[in-house]
Image (cartoon, rainbow, N blue to C red):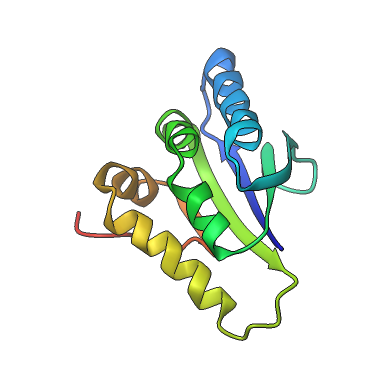
Length: 139
């Protein structure tokens, strides 16, 4: 099982209705993406982030299906422009020593095939974690 987790801080001045639209889109991902077995989306009280999401996904194939699902893409398009700091990480119960590299490769494959997403991610003030952090692609 892969527990894909994200934590985000929001840029100052974001309209509350835009923030709530993005949070609802995160919840919708959990409801409509078939590979998501369970999820939680809510306020993050453990540090400098305002919102967090965790999605339980069985395997790498399911993770890929999650990454490329239109509901996930929609959240990225409406949500990433609101984000200041972003961190993602994955907790897995698989002993495969190459799991981190395999997960990072899925994210990189996604960036390689989506220029708009790549630009949004590269424009974040801070981006850390398992989703291939740092600038992506040619700018």
